[in-house]
Length: 301
Image (cartoon, helix red, strand yellow):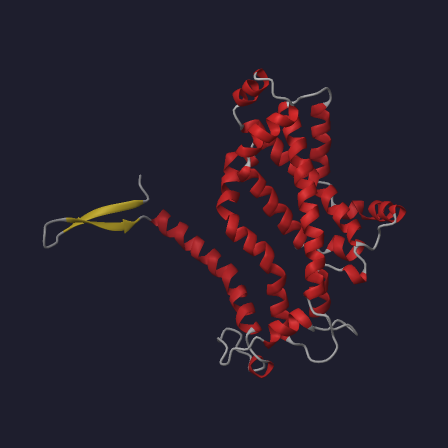
């Protein structure tokens, strides 16, 4: 039965169909509207609070729009918000997050895509066992690996630097990305691979000229997953980066939990929004490709 029913009603030019929504349609749309409101209301509160001054915030009406819009909180959050004795805002730590995210995403996606392509199309002795190890590695809690990684990065002489955070993020991103790429490449028509082999193409020629042009959706999925996970990470940043190299999430925590002076809720809200702008922007720009990548085999076995 269709979710939308039509009922004939009289009109000036004769009977015309009248749309009548079935109960299932009302439930679906009601659920979607409720979910949208559930996620948009906190964002609305953050935005309007960041645009208010402290006297207006103290009135207590968090849902009211600002009477006088001011961007002073945004400027302070970016340039001069304090954490203890240091008042450097989010600016320096934004670039720390960029330096961490860009190479981590590139390395993990490059290695994961080639590994997934190998496991899907170039089977070798022990490949299934290797794939099983990768699957297990995808579900090992990060906390269980912290102490060994601290020892490894210390012995390498990079503990407390951005290089340590980059290495850790790259390593932990590889197993899940290998799984995604392997499943995606396995879902592509095998005849394309066989035809390229018959034409004399080798490992890299097939990957670069056949597989890569067809893989934009899954690369988008991988990029969104990695950028979101790395940019929003707190644990690895606070453990491996060192105080002068903290990413934005650690700096945001320090700003919000600072107990010196007056608690500036507008600055805290502005800093929170600034921290989340990068992954939100990337998702909104490439959201359609993300859905295509998921639907095209990113989660198929």
